Image (cartoon, rainbow, N blue to C red; front, side, top):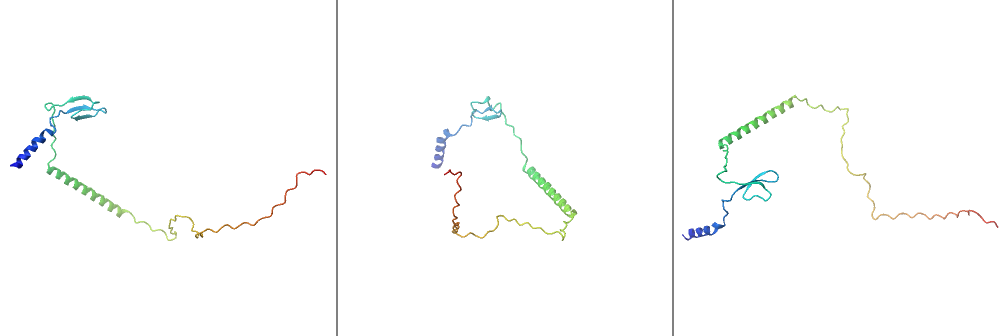
Length: 152
C-alpha cells in the first residue's frame, strides 16, 4: 500500500513540471518561401497564422497490408532473378559466338617490359672521402716588357 501511495505522491509532485500538450500551433512562411509549422513562429516570419483543432484536419493514407508488401517483395525478387538469368544466358551465348584469341606468331619476338626505377648502379664511395691531390706549383711567368722606355 505504501508503494502505491509513494507512486501517487511522485506523480502529483511531478505533474505540474510536465509540458502542456495544449500549446497553440502556428503556420508561417520563412524568408525562403518555405511553409513551416511549430509552437512559436520566429520574429522574421511572414503570414503567421494560428491553427485551431476545429479548422485543421489530419489526412491519413492507409499503407499496404503485410501480405501486399510480402507479395510485392516476392514479385520484385522474382523479376530480378529472371533479369539476372537472362543476362547470364546472353553472356554465355556471346562467349560461345566469340572466336578464341589467336596466339602470337612464332616469328614475332616476345617483348617483356620490366620497369626499373632508379639510376645506374655505381660502386659505393669510400668513407671518409680521400682528400684531393695537390696541384704541382708552377713557376711564375716572366714579367711583361715595359710599355715604353725613357730615353737615356
